[in-house]
Image (tube, rainbow, N blue to C red):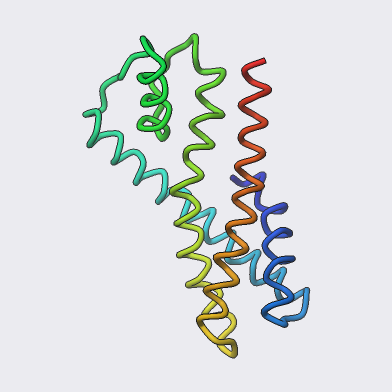
Length: 156
Protein backbone atom coordinates (compact mmCIF):
# COMPACT_ATOMS: atom_id res chain seq x y z
CA UNK A 1 0.00 0.00 0.00
CA UNK A 2 2.95 2.29 0.62
CA UNK A 3 3.88 2.17 -3.07
CA UNK A 4 0.38 3.21 -4.05
CA UNK A 5 0.18 6.29 -1.79
CA UNK A 6 1.48 8.80 -4.37
CA UNK A 7 -0.80 7.80 -7.27
CA UNK A 8 -3.74 7.51 -4.87
CA UNK A 9 -3.08 11.00 -3.46
CA UNK A 10 -2.85 12.39 -7.00
CA UNK A 11 -6.13 10.75 -8.04
CA UNK A 12 -7.99 11.77 -4.89
CA UNK A 13 -6.61 15.33 -4.96
CA UNK A 14 -7.73 15.77 -8.56
CA UNK A 15 -11.24 14.58 -7.69
CA UNK A 16 -11.57 16.58 -4.46
CA UNK A 17 -10.02 19.83 -5.70
CA UNK A 18 -12.83 21.22 -7.85
CA UNK A 19 -15.93 20.51 -5.72
CA UNK A 20 -14.20 21.66 -2.53
CA UNK A 21 -12.72 24.84 -4.09
CA UNK A 22 -9.51 24.45 -2.12
CA UNK A 23 -6.12 25.48 -3.56
CA UNK A 24 -4.26 22.61 -5.23
CA UNK A 25 -1.30 22.63 -2.85
CA UNK A 26 -3.50 22.53 0.21
CA UNK A 27 -5.67 19.75 -1.24
CA UNK A 28 -2.58 17.72 -2.12
CA UNK A 29 -1.10 18.20 1.37
CA UNK A 30 -4.35 17.46 3.23
CA UNK A 31 -5.28 14.46 1.10
CA UNK A 32 -1.70 13.24 1.52
CA UNK A 33 -1.94 13.49 5.30
CA UNK A 34 -5.29 11.68 5.25
CA UNK A 35 -3.85 8.88 3.10
CA UNK A 36 -0.78 8.47 5.28
CA UNK A 37 -3.13 8.11 8.27
CA UNK A 38 -5.08 5.50 6.31
CA UNK A 39 -1.90 3.64 5.40
CA UNK A 40 -0.61 3.65 8.99
CA UNK A 41 -3.93 3.01 10.78
CA UNK A 42 -6.51 1.81 8.29
CA UNK A 43 -4.58 -0.86 6.44
CA UNK A 44 -3.54 -2.73 9.62
CA UNK A 45 -7.09 -2.32 10.99
CA UNK A 46 -8.62 -3.71 7.78
CA UNK A 47 -6.09 -6.54 7.80
CA UNK A 48 -7.02 -7.32 11.40
CA UNK A 49 -10.72 -7.41 10.54
CA UNK A 50 -10.00 -9.86 7.72
CA UNK A 51 -7.81 -11.96 10.00
CA UNK A 52 -10.66 -12.04 12.52
CA UNK A 53 -13.06 -13.10 9.76
CA UNK A 54 -10.64 -15.86 8.80
CA UNK A 55 -10.42 -17.09 12.39
CA UNK A 56 -14.20 -16.95 12.88
CA UNK A 57 -15.08 -18.71 9.64
CA UNK A 58 -12.33 -21.31 9.39
CA UNK A 59 -10.96 -21.56 12.91
CA UNK A 60 -7.58 -20.80 11.39
CA UNK A 61 -7.47 -24.07 9.50
CA UNK A 62 -6.72 -24.61 5.84
CA UNK A 63 -9.67 -24.88 3.48
CA UNK A 64 -7.87 -26.86 0.80
CA UNK A 65 -7.53 -26.35 -2.92
CA UNK A 66 -9.50 -29.36 -4.17
CA UNK A 67 -12.24 -27.46 -6.02
CA UNK A 68 -12.66 -24.01 -7.54
CA UNK A 69 -15.09 -23.15 -4.70
CA UNK A 70 -12.48 -24.06 -2.08
CA UNK A 71 -9.85 -22.06 -3.97
CA UNK A 72 -12.13 -19.00 -3.99
CA UNK A 73 -12.95 -19.44 -0.31
CA UNK A 74 -9.26 -19.84 0.56
CA UNK A 75 -8.21 -16.67 -1.23
CA UNK A 76 -11.05 -14.57 0.17
CA UNK A 77 -11.53 -15.84 3.72
CA UNK A 78 -7.82 -16.35 4.24
CA UNK A 79 -6.69 -13.19 2.41
CA UNK A 80 -5.07 -11.70 5.51
CA UNK A 81 -3.08 -14.84 6.33
CA UNK A 82 -2.64 -17.14 3.37
CA UNK A 83 -2.04 -20.79 4.06
CA UNK A 84 1.18 -21.66 2.18
CA UNK A 85 -0.25 -23.66 -0.69
CA UNK A 86 3.12 -23.57 -2.45
CA UNK A 87 1.78 -24.45 -5.91
CA UNK A 88 -0.85 -21.70 -5.78
CA UNK A 89 0.85 -18.72 -4.12
CA UNK A 90 1.79 -17.18 -7.48
CA UNK A 91 -1.87 -16.29 -8.05
CA UNK A 92 -3.12 -16.28 -4.46
CA UNK A 93 -0.95 -13.35 -3.33
CA UNK A 94 -2.22 -10.85 -5.94
CA UNK A 95 -5.78 -12.21 -5.56
CA UNK A 96 -5.65 -11.84 -1.76
CA UNK A 97 -4.19 -8.34 -2.06
CA UNK A 98 -7.09 -7.42 -4.32
CA UNK A 99 -9.64 -8.93 -1.90
CA UNK A 100 -8.09 -6.92 0.94
CA UNK A 101 -8.99 -3.74 -0.97
CA UNK A 102 -12.60 -4.17 0.18
CA UNK A 103 -12.05 -3.61 3.91
CA UNK A 104 -9.26 -1.12 3.12
CA UNK A 105 -11.73 0.95 1.09
CA UNK A 106 -14.09 1.30 4.05
CA UNK A 107 -11.24 2.04 6.45
CA UNK A 108 -9.99 4.70 4.02
CA UNK A 109 -13.37 6.37 3.72
CA UNK A 110 -13.87 6.48 7.49
CA UNK A 111 -10.36 7.66 8.39
CA UNK A 112 -10.00 10.16 5.54
CA UNK A 113 -13.43 11.67 6.29
CA UNK A 114 -12.41 12.06 9.92
CA UNK A 115 -9.07 13.69 9.03
CA UNK A 116 -10.39 15.98 6.30
CA UNK A 117 -13.45 17.19 8.20
CA UNK A 118 -11.01 18.46 10.82
CA UNK A 119 -8.61 19.98 8.29
CA UNK A 120 -11.40 21.62 6.26
CA UNK A 121 -13.51 23.02 9.10
CA UNK A 122 -14.66 25.93 6.94
CA UNK A 123 -16.42 23.52 4.56
CA UNK A 124 -19.74 21.78 5.03
CA UNK A 125 -19.28 18.30 6.51
CA UNK A 126 -21.66 16.75 4.02
CA UNK A 127 -19.64 18.14 1.11
CA UNK A 128 -16.41 16.78 2.61
CA UNK A 129 -18.02 13.37 3.17
CA UNK A 130 -19.27 13.25 -0.41
CA UNK A 131 -15.95 14.36 -1.90
CA UNK A 132 -13.96 11.85 0.17
CA UNK A 133 -16.28 9.00 -0.79
CA UNK A 134 -16.11 9.86 -4.53
CA UNK A 135 -12.34 10.25 -4.38
CA UNK A 136 -11.94 6.87 -2.69
CA UNK A 137 -14.21 5.16 -5.21
CA UNK A 138 -11.93 6.36 -8.02
CA UNK A 139 -8.66 5.63 -6.24
CA UNK A 140 -9.82 2.14 -5.28
CA UNK A 141 -10.96 1.48 -8.85
CA UNK A 142 -7.37 2.31 -9.82
CA UNK A 143 -6.04 -0.04 -7.12
CA UNK A 144 -8.47 -2.77 -8.19
CA UNK A 145 -7.33 -2.42 -11.81
CA UNK A 146 -3.69 -2.59 -10.70
CA UNK A 147 -4.38 -5.65 -8.55
CA UNK A 148 -6.27 -7.32 -11.37
CA UNK A 149 -3.39 -6.70 -13.78
CA UNK A 150 -0.97 -8.09 -11.21
CA UNK A 151 -3.15 -11.21 -10.96
CA UNK A 152 -3.43 -11.62 -14.73
CA UNK A 153 0.32 -11.28 -15.24
CA UNK A 154 0.97 -13.70 -12.36
CA UNK A 155 -1.21 -16.36 -13.93
CA UNK A 156 0.47 -16.10 -17.35
